[in-house]
Amino acid sequence: MNKTEQFKTLIRESERIVFLTGAGISTASGLADFRGKEGLEKRKSPVPYETLLSIDFFERDPAAFYKYYRDFLIVGDAKPNIAHKKIAALGDKAAVVTQNIDGLHQLAGSKNVTEIHGTTLTYRCVKCRNTYPESYIKRTPGVPKCECGGILRPDIVFYGEMLDDRKVEKAVRLISGCDLLAAVGTSLVVYPAAGLVRYRPRNAKFVIVNFDPTPYDTYADLVINEDISKVFEGI
Image 1: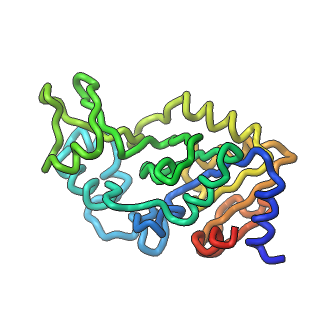
Image 2: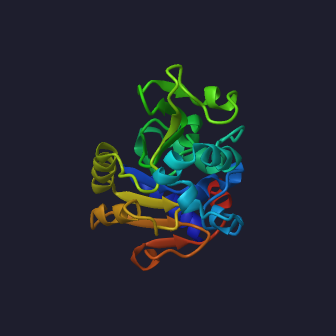
């Protein structure tokens, strides 16, 4: 039995699955990851992406932030790929805790999705807190502004900001109650998200599906360092 078949068997035999997903699951949809060969951290820029995506940089130079943001982070016409769809097809059996901000899990049909880093699909005014959809940002050039004149910010967690406690608590609750935790497309090096794997029950199976090795590989019951889409084609 190959590794994909082993993963398929674990999924079939499990009743409470949590998929912890990262940027690698969306690369087949045409979105860049962060640490892969074509990832954001490899792109030449006079300013590191951690700085460009920091709250300090956004507040200091929103025009420069939005130029980078529009070029690399707005989803555009990206569609869910086979991995998103296969996870969604599991229905109530599977919950998703994602580091991604692209909304592709929901677009694929997953209902129980916790976006611990926020989303690019909604925006809010820094002054009056009024909210806007992504469609408004796409048709508004430059720095998008609210009717009140305030600058709009994406509902993402910037570098330098804390995660939403309610979302973290939900993620911990889901993982603590799972019988299978599958980390898919995540390097498991970004904290506190990576630390969530430590909340899995001792008797829960732990699978890692990622093209590159992760710091948690030695703790996993199954590690698949293969193309994510090809793995899920066999699920």
